[in-house]
Length: 130
Image (cartoon, rainbow, N blue to C red; front, side, top):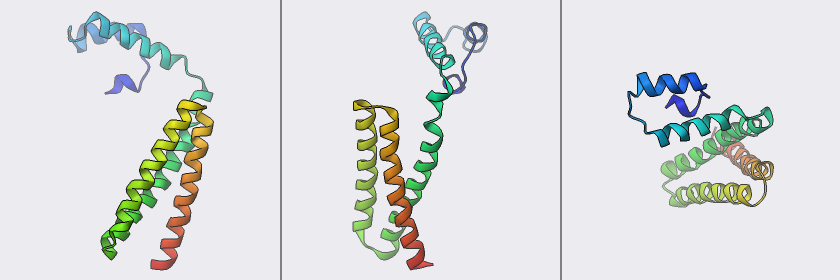
């Protein structure tokens, strides 16, 4: 829940352990939580910046995927259903692979390319249908 999104101070961690969880966390779990919070507190703006445009690109991609599914349902052409699933799988595979093999900026570049193609698809469908 909120512990994963909000960095906590040592005082907050002690309060959580004593009051909120009332002993539900083991010492090992508390140590893991402490390490996660140290990592979150050490983030710089450069660590966060790639996530901002990535979310916008992800929205564009998902709108395109939704339109493919909609088109499949309206026309009865199952090809578009398969195309949406394959497009999403290919995008995820490419981004994760590139992130593992190179760096975050190259992975986000691949997401950008998928977003551009999704945007072109959205424009084509919007012109044809509306």
